[in-house]
Length: 263
Ligand code: F6R
Image (cartoon, rainbow, N blue to C red; front, side):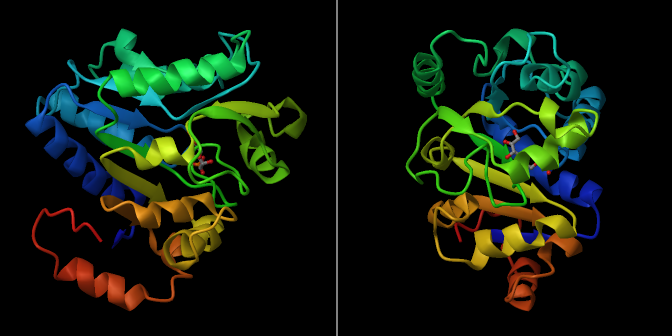
């Protein structure tokens, strides 16, 4: 993992946008993996700025969501397809019909998960995946205990995740769905490049476990240690509990310019 620490989320978004622009410079039809939640918002805003200034075009891109709540009505503002449309698709030039997500209202949820996994494969796989991390170490909705080889599957959300996400549902945990459809850890590990962004002190434990802990189902983010093209973008608060902080800063300061280190 390449650990990149910057003072602000905006500076982290610049690093992420730069990495995404490199992918699209090589392949304008690349497949982007998009996450919901608050962490990636500065990245979408930076992508939007670049699209508006003409330095990036996503007009030939496809995008796949990580996850979707089960059971929210089609027009619910917190349904993840609406979140991604509002926060990402509407502010860039991506074709809204090329943005895909799991159908959380499907009659057969297992079949829907298999269909979605296959759709990602059929699109050629994800070229660059944006991720956040939950306070319990989850990536997408792969809660602690999920197989590190899991593919897209229905997930039961933990009390911690529902309480964390209550802020999007009028602060009322009872309004947060109990289930979601999510790309599995194995699905995420198939992405060619991964950008994980985490900010704030409430992520510090999860970040330490992800980067330095054992690879374990107790922190599904730790599976990213098994991927060789991950940039972990952190502010100081999220990085604060890393034991080898000075070492990561030194590597970053001396890295070959623009390289994905394959660490
Ligand atoms: C979002 C997702 C989640 C979030 C995580 C962090 O699609 O799958 O894993 O990335 O819960 O959420 P925020 O960024 O809101 O703290």
